[in-house]
Image (cartoon, rainbow, N blue to C red; front, side, top):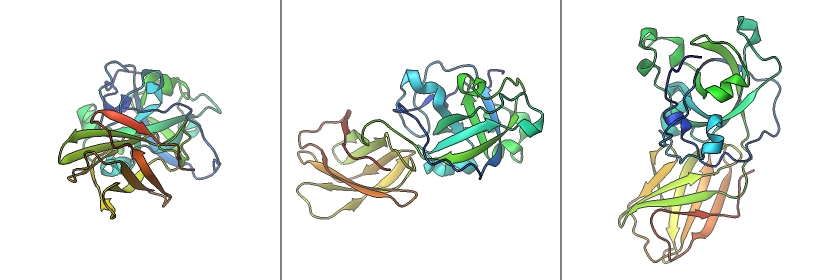
Amino acid sequence: MANLFPILAMASMLLINGLGVEGLDASGWTAATATSSDSTANPTGGACGYNIIDADAKYAVAVSALLFKEGQSCGQCYNIKCDSQSGSKCREGSTVTVVATSFFPPERVLPSYGSDSQLMNEHFHLTQPAWEEISSDDSKVVPVLYQRVPCKKQGGVQFTINGQAYFMLVLISNVAGDGSIKSVSIKGSNGTSWVAMSRNNGANWHTNVCLKGQSISFDVTLTDGQNLKFENVVPADWSFGQTYSSSLQFS
């Protein structure tokens, strides 16, 4: 398939190791469209803010605005298969599981489709290796079917601390289960109250509270309502630019 998009942000994936599917519902497939790119070079992050693991870049996917929802879908997992009823060259019985890691702006790649095109609806931009697992079609836009599936991860949820004194930016990654985060609160060891964080972009959340020298806890709620409290997951001697792993994980 033509090199439509430098997989841009789509290659923005963090820890999709052990990607898997549990409890699949055989029904509930939804019609969508897909494009692909043969370029996975220079992965630089993306709209969700994840860092890339090269070995797993092929399972990253950029999604259209309708699915992206201003970053609310970051981390969600999807099963995708080629729509064999559409006349496309499908690999029968094959599906690929991908993770939403970025936003796909179709007007930057296929301007002739315009704002009212099918690409403004449910659309997935796959890496070429992922696409080849389900189809051999070389059309620019191909009908597919998709369904949301639970994400399966190795290890616990991870928190990467960035920012500066009174601006803490936290990337929350390696999230299993629903995969996407609805809300986050933070608390330092010197405090007693949880402080709500704001979504900065994608999977990054920020606060203006200064917590230097304190151990840090997080209260995280996924979009499906699952909630976990990660007590003192970040030690008091934390520093910016570091990632801290929890032993806890969503189901």
